[in-house]
Image 1 (cartoon, each protein chain N blue to C red):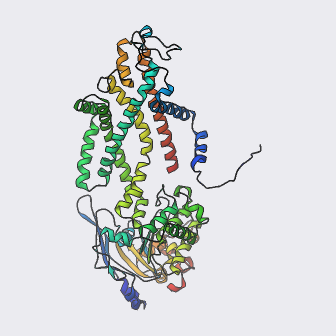
Image 2: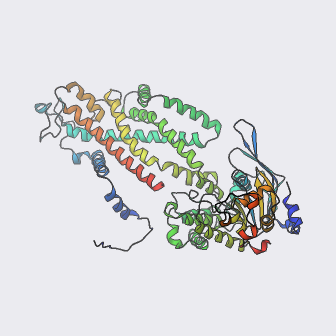
Image 3: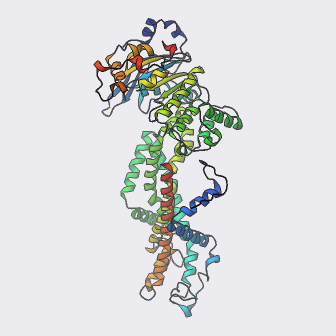
Length: 293
Length: 305
């Protein structure tokens, strides 16, 4: 067999920019490629829903109420004839925003608490550690429910509640990473080179502690979408007629025996988003662990 | 414990002690123990280091040599208490200094090469950037001149293709290249003293020889080196003076050739006996079967004699 090479060989060089992307994409497993496509579709739907929807999400068509999936209504219609596919598409923005927002709230809290628990003086770190342990003793959903009850049901309170509910887990992760990096030989080497404490933190500890979090963020977005939809389904988040996915499930449950599609398709959308982001997160995790090795 | 100054005086080197670059007398380090009782890990250590001299701290793991070296640059560790009768660098005391003062000293005046090069470089930063950063921290030059200096320093420590290597992250470099990059970052600002903590541990013999070559060049340029090692074979190639540590104390001190040829302490003898030799292959090392130091170390630097 003859192997032909084209272009100039540059052994040892890290491929950068587009060439790096070209080397990653063909080696990614099919599940990751599909996950990226699914995530891309939902991100487009969130940013520009009219591009991919077929009807207005609020336009009613009583003559076609509770219509099963047809070429006219790809995923069927609800009890007042609104197109389910379009509602799912228009609900993407809210569902993803809640997922991303919850993740952002969780990370913001976790970064402050996690680094303080690891690197602050003992009299600050110890109480933070105890609080984190207490919060971790509560199941995430219970903690989120507690805050929804305190803040009242709305998209904002849902976002904050899911964020607070998931923050302790991330804070412990950041704490563990920060401790590990702080005690690493390269941080000691940085100190030996004359880095003052602030520079050691900003240039060495923080970037290295954040590295595994890239994967965790991707995993967490999918998880947050599931938590938020779950709370909306329980009537504690976004309420109908909003097309948020949890709210769609909540609205559809009254007709579940007559119209299975009202529960199945919003559920599939939640599962697809959660799976896609989880798969992407795991792939990033595997690659970064491989790179670390 | 025999004072190093006394030992050097016996060897007619006492006069030079007046111009010491580093003067350490009665260095003690304690760590907080689990039971609340302080653990005394370094006990009354004396070190004198002159310009261009290499002093080796030799001893088994846990003998206190690394803690001693770290205490000299204010990195003894969390919960460590350091005290000394004298702890001076160029006549300036190192005791009671602020973190900022230590940060100014480290890297610029005293370089520190850590034990394990494989994990002592930030995995996310290209090695060239690491060196440039060390220069920037101490206010050296412009961005362009720092970059040129980093490439030059990499070249000086024997890193081939410095332009290419400077762009690479530690994970893309071999163990030997990483160790040399680490040395480059420690010596970029031409510190007066370089402390090398087991610089050849975990390296194969070929790479060991390369790294020792780099350290020899540094000594030839007038840099003083404190070499920490458990390996007499490595020490014999570089050190002018050997301090043998055990249990936190110096049990024997003297010029390299003297210590190797006529070890006074049984522990020093045991360390020398522990050096693998083809003459003792397949046999148990014992006091009666010890290899001759002169035969083992024919390449000892002549100026130590």
